[in-house]
Image (cartoon, rainbow, N blue to C red; front, side):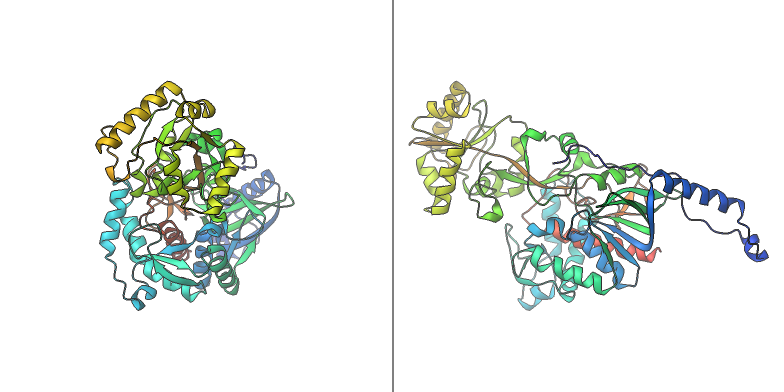
Length: 516
């Protein structure tokens, strides 16, 4: 992970666009007017300050080629805009390589299967799940656009297999044919963009924005693999950089210290996109940032590697007992049934978190799976899962406060016998006493894949300033500019994050082209 921002280049001075005065034009004068000389001089000074080695021109510049960046690039180029897309990595895709599908209501796939979903019901559910802190108009736009967006993806070669509920409850999840955005979405969208004339510049990272005298954004600076700085002048810039999960400083500001979590997903989300926006005067939304996060048992295989103790354990073992390093229980362990993405939130204030099971519980969780059994044994060998014949020994091995832990287990077992959890209200249907050894303490930490919603945007995904006014020429899309989730991502309506990626990219690109 990168600590802080090492390659940031701040925004230069005045704008780079100059035009001859009307009197000079009418007179056919060959000498530049005074204002032209001034602006050109400032533009040259700006280039020199950034050591610009090359300048490029385009209508729309897209920074990032993940789900939202590709959607923006394809949409802008479809209507004839000269479009450049820069990408810090060597290939396109970003977080899409770990995405399995996309939300949609009213797609032709759903219509063919006779699936009828009430969009108002979906919107209400999502707003309630977000504790009424999300953008209502933003949800209305995303949901009502989602069916046509799926059809548009199909028309551009993206392949889907079926419509299901995934981890939610409603038939809205359009699952990719191969189950991977890296296989079904990215290649098709790159091909569509290239067919439309989009220029991709890989291993080229945006480092700063060019601002005109009137405060509008007029392009960006980028650093190439060789270390050269190029200036790309553009009528509109669309930031699609995929969040700041790799930036330890920004994550700490959100409440996660480097030692308390691990990073999942793909590399490259170092916060430069966020910093470019902040330097340009975009309103900071980090106080409301949500995290796409789940549990990780260190050393065990990941979710996409058939991991049995990665993400799954937070939802598939509601009968277990969760304790912190003090041996205290701190939540009703069945709470993740409402929203799986909430599983890490109550652990953020813990120094250590353990999911505790006895032998009947662990056998229920493993369910005879040989791979799961091996992963359990390996994690015990690595010291991330502890196994002991007694609860006292388990506490000693794991570093849990023994006296408090003993009191917690006795209290919990009493609740299990009575059928009433008087502390946290856990459902009696999933309450089992911790009684039959050997006992297991499973060390879990948050694994963060993506930060969601760090720069504030309006309904067209224009970046907005401290006065809530749109910044001309600047858009923020995808997870960076998402205003649909504050502090918590809702996964019950599955595929919503990717639906926002596609919708925000398309909406921003259409607006950018309309305002060229």
